[in-house]
Image 1 (cartoon, rainbow, N blue to C red):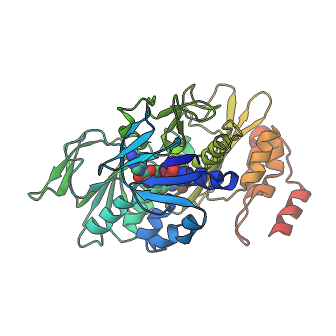
Image 2 (image 1 turned 120 degrees about the vertical axis):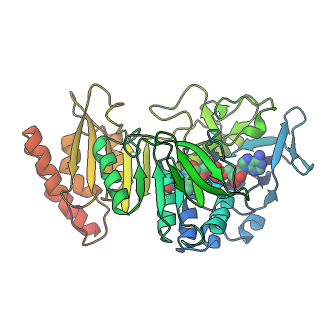
Image 3 (image 1 turned 30 degrees about the vertical axis):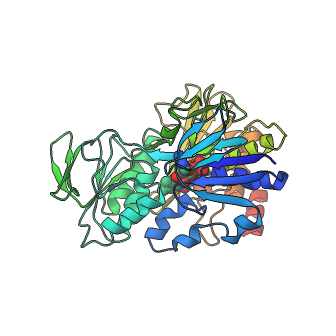
Length: 448
Ligand SMILES: Cc1cc2nc3c(=O)[nH]c(=O)nc-3n(C[C@H](O)[C@H](O)[C@H](O)COP(=O)(O)OP(=O)(O)OC[C@H]3O[C@@H](n4cnc5c(N)ncnc54)[C@H](O)[C@@H]3O)c2cc1C
């Protein structure tokens, strides 16, 4: 019987295993150096914040794997001998495979900063990072200040985690405004304000020069590059992005660039690769990046590759882009494409609305000539994925989207609605007379 071995027990590897099991009787082994059982990486922060225990982040009961004949092997794969189809582990063990799936995920970026490997310095990616954080920042008397380096989605989660234990945070962000490489100015500015409202010492246009050690090899401070200022701290969080976790493939015959190079069927030059570690050889699909480091794409890749492995060769087609995240108290969702002003295409326009007091805003991108809806960012207003996905597929106009906006609203009952105000602003700016359809109000209230 064919033996499928999967390196990585994250969402990508586990989804592949589950779907291979659904469609075949192959022997399946999942290998991981991190934990025996699959857990939800996106929930790591809630463990530190006391909202859940680590066991609650495991979507499947421990008996699930045996029942479904999926073997779990703990260990770190050092090298792959693709000629003999053998994995070599760091403890000297070997494992033979017929078909290999590489789903090894990401690792936090480090930029050769002096002191980056000291005790008390960590990323926030693996379970081991969480354990380190518990050790070095259990409370505010042991950790008097933490410095976070890198202003992205993981950086802000890290700040929220520390603040949940009242630990003072200094947040070093290289850009002139938070995540403005991605967000339009309106949103990025609102997030800057929100971070400061949470008493986080946000330092924009600020780089790390060095992390200094005490006499025991533990971090005692960081030096700011621009000013030479020394900021005393007990923990440093490195959150300057992630990159594919593929160092162990360097000496193998598997082709890599930044990630494991794959075609549209997720096949490498020799084997298959999925998830955060995969890089599309011909560049990203549509406007997507060649490497996609998000949860749902890992899951989609797992499902797709399982089909191919079970004899139904299937192309990876991720559909319209979407993503969601949280910036402290503000929920963020994006559907389709809304870039920052620098990356905005010439033939595109933005319609923007921001609430006068609350941290709520939207940006809708549309084509200047055809008025075709291209994408939306929403902050503080929950919207329905399936509705925007449909409107993108149907190539609806911005006018249609605004007229029916209430249908997309997903806020809990009794939340204040802002659709009328949003439409009114568009009407004023564009001298249009869009009216929220009665039908859409009806749909909304029958759902509520
Ligand atoms: C704190 C945090 C919050 C996030 N929040 C969101 C979110 O809100 N929404 C979202 O879409 N995405 C989020 N992400 C990103 C998302 O979690 C990842 O895209 C996803 O988990 C990647 O899944 P994967 O299966 O490809 O890899 P991973 O989950 O990284 O799993 C790969 C596994 O392979 C193991 N491995 C690697 N190399 C070897 C080896 N040589 N030998 C043995 N084992 C090996 C690793 O240790 C790891 O356990 C978040 C990530 C983090 C860190």
